[in-house]
Length: 150
Image 1: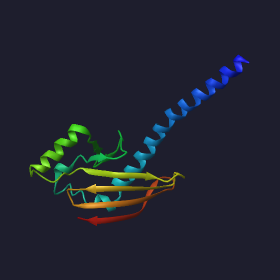
Image 2: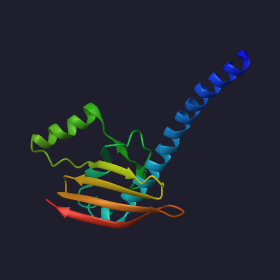
Image 3: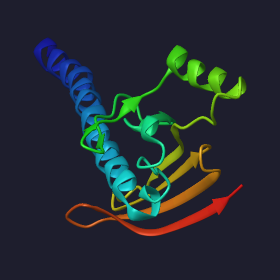
Image 4: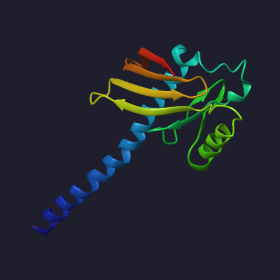
């Protein structure tokens, strides 16, 4: 009887640990795929203007749900800003050096079926907000992009 109790306890304790350990990795991969599709979208790409503003390279990204996403843009890794690094860019903007030129992810929502997602962005350097709807086919594809200037 004790062996059965021990087996049940181990099953109850170990299975959630394995599940929790696997899900964040899978979630990170999904988030990376979604964000890569977003930053590669012509709808978003039109605002970077690195030919006019070369200091916008590498792309700087911050915001909700991005964690340590590994992305690339303009042939180099995207730089993820958090904490003090982000404060430096905000302080420079307040001093009038330039508008904050990082792309801010304000939300990422993935449908429960895992086949649709919505990403909301703010790009202060260009004064635009974007709401991007994506659909999972073989890859994540942008279905619709709504842009609002402010």
